[in-house]
Length: 556
Image (cartoon, rainbow, N blue to C red):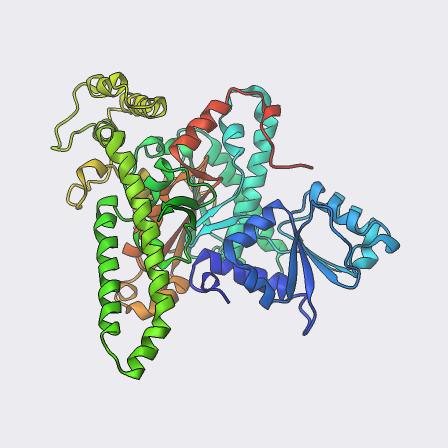
């Protein structure tokens, strides 16, 4: 099995659940099956396993359910699909009549609750060909080990569009989000206390009420589950408006900076080395990426060359020995050296590409952005005239319009903040870089939630949390050795966060940093989708367009 499906947190949990509820459920010794996926389940499986994992489970071919396929009547087919009319109609076409069936038999697994109308349609058409028909309740994508998305980018449009005609679409999106959030909790075996941020809009309140009701219904219906009451976990639901600053600021930690400044699509980075064009996928399989993605770019640029020197010196030291055993060891290590150096070359290229963009224009922008965001300069002096800080950016012909818009938005946020600035946690003692003084609001919220310091008026409960929310854990839990880290995680509390309207890479980073600092509580953060500043501006641009020009998540 691939390392991806072992110690990668949420990805591992999802893969193990798919393995147990889908693959093991229909597995027969020595029998191979064809697997049919739709758009959502293709993304879901790609996020948590490799083709080699599926081969080990008896899957010989993976096909797209929407495409025309040749019949393979001697083989059984496993359909892992979303409960939508589009996917169900494609399934029904495969079993139109006994003489035209594409496969010997079908095992159907839906990601979520299948409406009665669709279930009855299947039952009436081809029930004799079906060996299994189950719902497994995984309607989210494990984006990283502590990050999930609901894959509903249109939620931004329906939640924030000024068009009164989008109200019915908003209700449907809210329902879809609530259903998918419940599957996150169910996959983690949690029935959390649900809280929400009461301002600035009522989106969080509405969604929290829906989630609480659906959680209650889910655990009533789910007879197998031993969870009936609330577990030692909390779910915080927040509207994107709680921190607009973090969505437009230039971040200088490696992952956030790369996704902001470079054209990385589907986590694929394209670069040139030795005159050749190459591609690299930025994923958690790459231990070096996991190690450096949340570090400041200045630290990354120091660290990678050091690592390359270390590997070179290790290799030379091994090469210097002429004994047979030393040569055998060298032969064994060569692919390992090559793989390590390739990874480091990729990340060095990535870091240098980021720095080239940074030095060109971004460095000057960052000081302005930090001053506007914090209301103070690097020396801690209060910014008296925000317009005077902004003006040089607007007059500079080297800055593109997108960067100028980002600076204007920061200016607007700075002058519209109540009483200047909301109360923030004092982080002046923390070591930081002058151009990275801003800390996303979400980090304050995570730390306050774990230490049970969230104001109950500002963060009302939809449900009563367990009698004791022990997010900070006992002292003994913090003192356990590193070997027990995974056990701590399993037995500790979980803080699940959901942000309506997108999360940024800097906010994702905060989940890892806070989890690392509070060993007894794991923070899992998710949203409708992942935001970059450009993506946010594109989303805002779409808000004035009529809704029929925006694709909708439901096709029923």
